[in-house]
Length: 185
Image (tube, rainbow, N blue to C red; front, top):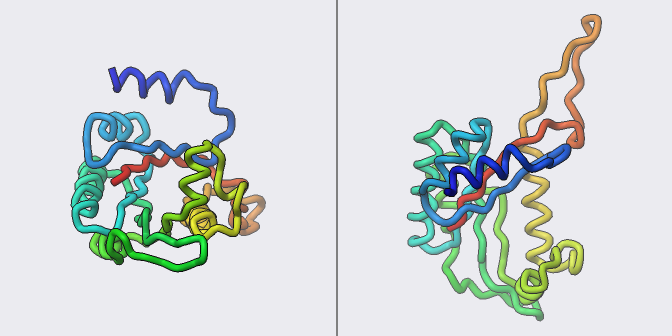
């Protein structure tokens, strides 16, 4: 059923011109990841983990599955990277450094650390983007930096040469869409 639903989701939905398609996957590996690898062979995995070792183990399995099906791992994001109080005080509730440790192990970039903040939780519960509602929040700033990092590492299209003139790199808005799946840990 999941394979059929994903196939319909990817083939029958009119997405328009996509820059990115992010698919939030359940932790670890499984049929959904395998189906996406078959349907989107150009997809790149973004591994999301929390700082603690147990989450790294789950995220590592997702990375191993991506490698087995020859999908590139774009990088690692550390979610719940500390708790920032409204007064700006930080607490490392789940430890620290686990995302960087996993990125180093996988030899991929560490793309960002997203802290827990009250506005992040409140806006997620309300279904509104934090970056729009409260762009100065530390979590919103981390998410914006992460998005810029994803754009920066996206492959550029090959541009044709015109009468022996060198091709200029494409601007970010001219880049080809990239399918990306997100195994969440």
